[in-house]
Image (cartoon, rainbow, N blue to C red; front, side):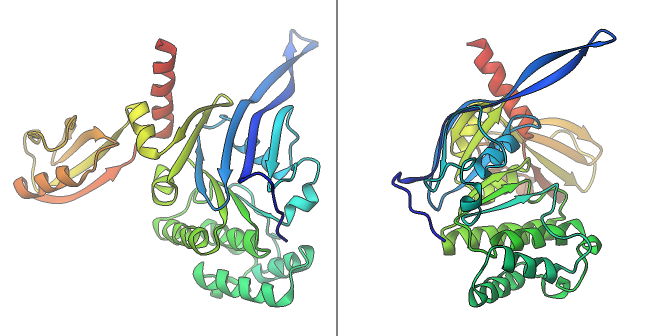
Length: 330
């Protein structure tokens, strides 16, 4: 069921706050109430059909934001709308328009075969039979679930269960999909399948996607826009390349040579590239994350006896720490 909104933006967040009361032990017998501000005046807007990365370190406020967007938590202050609906006041109505996947928790029935979980959701969401069959067949095909439908959820691997959860979140044709660490703990093949599916879903159906993850590769491959949150505040909202520039982050190129050699010489291959470590035939080279690795790889392949190489993405926590350091110095 589609809900029309007068606002051109599908998700509207204005100065949202969430404060929790926590009791801490003071002395041997007394407890003192302390307030924890998990989300502190965040504002952003997401147009219909956009896929946005929402990233930050553990405890930054990402999951709290998602829970307010789904209506699980009520904001302590500010204004929040999804498809024109106040999530905390009309949670049941909103449920028809959203899908949620939490990487650490499943929405599937643990002891039932996967297909039985889907049949239960068919009834819970009152999905028309024809629509359910079409959606189920599409999810099963694209997420490679055919051989898993009759397997109890508890017997699925993490990667299989994650794909099963994503399918479950999409059976009722949600207009927005919230993904909280959807590729956590997955192997390379499973990650690729999940990313391909999400990319096709967004392109073909125009599903709005808000993705939280610690894996910058997820963001690079899926999202044009990224928002960074830490200590409950929005630090950055823009393109990923701009985030790297603001945080002065670096990628690492790990080079395996045929034999031990002196540090690789880098005459202007990539501005700012340098050798940071040499250990036998393996060398680690750092270069700005906003730059392409291609010129660096081409130069090394042409001048050195190369066996293998890989590119390691910058750690999100490191990028954010640099952003904070720069802001504090201002």
